[in-house]
Amino acid sequence: MKKLYKEISIITLIAIMIIALLQFPVNATNDELEIVKTENEYLLYDMTIMENEFDFIFTKDENIEASALDFSTAINSIKDAEGNNVAYIDSTLENTYFKDANGDTTNAYMWIKQGEEVSGPILVDLNTAITQEIIDFVSKTTTRIPVTIGQEEREPVTEENTTITTTVGYLQIEAQKGYTYEYQLIELPNSSYTRFVELAKEISNFEENAVSYENISKINEFYQLYNNLVPENWNEVANNRIEQPEDARNGEQYVVWIKATNSTGENIVDVQFMTSVREETEERTTETVKEEVTTTTKLPVTFDSNMILIIVFAVIIVAIIVLLIVRKKLANKSK
Image (cartoon, rainbow, N blue to C red):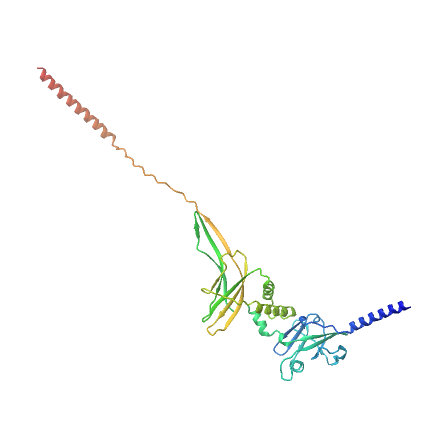
């Protein structure tokens, strides 16, 4: 009997604990909440509930019991431009729950009811809201400082019979009057920049004015990473051109931070993404060495054939005359 009573007591205790857990409200974390500040209100995105309609209320006390909440005064969710169900804070709600006696902004807590299920409290910090300025800042990244990314051929280098022409990449700043420029190159891959580069590619593919929880979340994450990664040390830009590293290979990727500073010390910081180019072309030339040999020869003297006959005939006549003269002299001596 004692054993049976002990088992019943244990089962009863477990049942009481389960019932208590079921009745205890589910606390959502602020990580699930994205806040967008529009011209007239704040929109609150909670990805866990925005597919269906819900009711919501605000409290200044996070320790209030769920049973003490009065959902008879709850506010119905609204739909954003893409059909997501979102909570909102207009000027009346802001003044009621998010302002202290001095008019300063304070935090409040949101409770949500879908069907019979109540979740909360969710911390709502309006200071974390994404403003239109942040959205514009992110959307204008890579365009705040105008640049041209191109490539050019270096002066050909000839070694023996081979001429090598190298093509490399560069980033040319379209300099504005009164500004000086500095830069910092970050070679990829870099563990600190992996997510930053991924988000930059995704954000560049956003449709214009597309607003959704996913986009807002990425814009916010990119903005936070951007501010955390801005370098502290800078290199001076020469001739408004940023050359890729001399040892850069074709296809290597770089994050290029650029800072423009005017005469009053105000600066603009922007970031670019550059892929290095290195292409080498070789041209071989075969040189044929010609040895010029100059030979001096005496050209034969050529005459007309009739002239030869005349000369021969004259020689014979002269010989005959000489012979006759010699004979005559010999004959006279013999007498």
